[in-house]
Image (cartoon, rainbow, N blue to C red; front, side, top):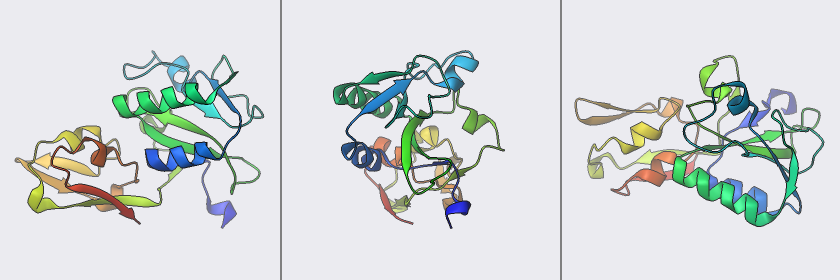
Length: 180
């Protein structure tokens, strides 16, 4: 089973907070995707979070930070709709080494189909009867699980990775995250 796990997996922001709550020390580096590309229109550069400095990051500027700095990253991730993608140790895939905060603007994962990522523990459950068809959830779904077609929401649950962004932005409060 351990061999079947990919380096990255998707989780909700609440799950990311829980992972972070169990850590004592934090390091951040600039995002390698943002540095290699033309930057990011959604967020700042220093959003790659590590729980030990062993990996060194994919971008420059690795530095140790306090918990309140990490809380600032989480707040920005919520405001700018970044997907929380924890990553595992290459040699011990049951342990989490850090968290990437990703979007469809600059991140390699969303631009390269060859970059694999495991789906999260949760997936969306939408009360279609309460849906207003506003399209906000489809706008933030980087995985193609939600689309507005002729004013109606269409959901492809097999494409849902469980990031929870759709639930975050739903003004009708008709989206819940449920165990996969």
